[in-house]
Length: 302
Image (cartoon, rainbow, N blue to C red; front, side, top):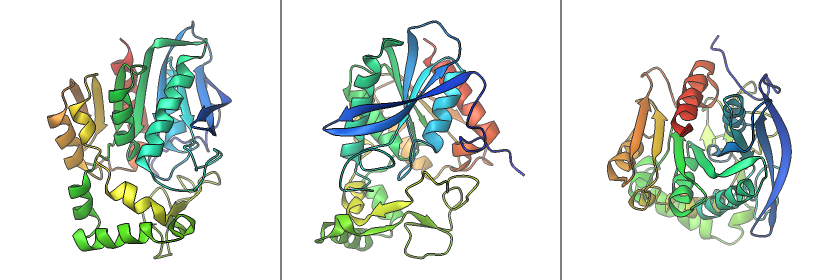
């Protein structure tokens, strides 16, 4: 059995402590978990950590935040507006603009804390939030560096290919613009329900991995337009800060990562693991998380 590393099976990790925190983002109170080293001199270098689409802070964002705390960083995982324990309506909308704004709010919150060095704040985006994080870091002077893990970085043309072509995407966008779309909520993931957005996928449908009680496991139909029209590649033209990408040939969208790295104005360092490391392995496979967290900690240690 593959060893997994999650917040559920190891809620307390030697070398790190967690504190419940909250902060404002455009009038909504967002709930977070701030992971700190058990023993370290302050002020600390800091990282804002965000996870895959539809997820909450108790999943991969929290796992990486805790791992970075063990390695000497103050690391924040939080629930985005309308997700998890955070305020905000409509609920369960995967809106890149709102989530990017939340990352800016998280950076401001971290910069104001006395235990954190405001000159050493970085961003870490995992999977879908890689695009949001890269854009936030590109545009926010509070961030100095950015790391991406198993990055999903699509543009509208890629989205058409992924989601069945122009007609299929147009239909999803039309559904998201229909009256009552925000209140039409589908299962996020299911092993049996064909109406779910992710059907029979690993991690999200496994109770000992991503299918945890804290996971909303919901997806508003209003998500389709902002998600499918999002251009995660665009921030490459604005990013001038150092970037680390950690992935493998088997991640969900390697072409997006390669296109972004080629387009970026910034220095982009890459760590590509083996072909046996799939997208979901980056979320909780012990050896993969350890290797990724080690590389990120080293990259941020400047």
